[in-house]
Image 1 (cartoon, rainbow, N blue to C red):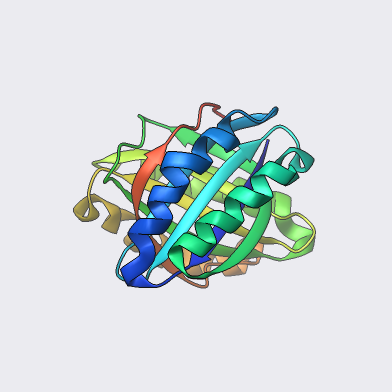
Image 2: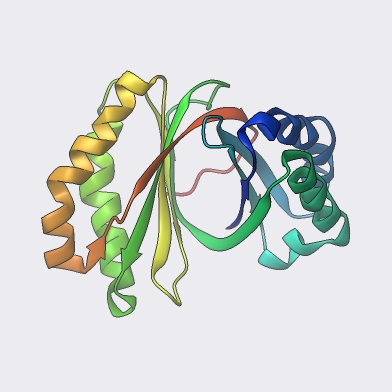
Length: 203
């Protein structure tokens, strides 16, 4: 399965317009397209950033003309700019559905290209288990571009007070990850869930 990550850098006073466009009009276009496996929308209202993660059987399915128009409409509504990233969904763990208002930590990941398999195993076997044991854990997924070694590590939490588990665990493992598998975590962003309809579990 693959993920297309659309990041809209909009204006804070227009972010609700962008969300309304996505949820009231564009979500239907995405979810009704052949090969779609769901859509999760996230927002940082203070920064004016909207993240729409759509999931697909094949990357080509996410490039339909109707979807391109939908993305353009959301960008215009938020009065912003669009950055698009495409990844393979390498790992997904779900404890329960991501409800509106729950918290997502989005951590950027960089793994040495020759050590991607080792890096993914490290995240799955050593980073995920302590997170899953934490209070308020709702789910996690690892997205990876195997050509560049760049990726995203997303964890979902009931509340911000629960999400601090991510910060502590990744902080504790930074040096180990760099030494053992050539993995770094350049930065972490925080978002609120607007809505999630993702349906497929990958282990």
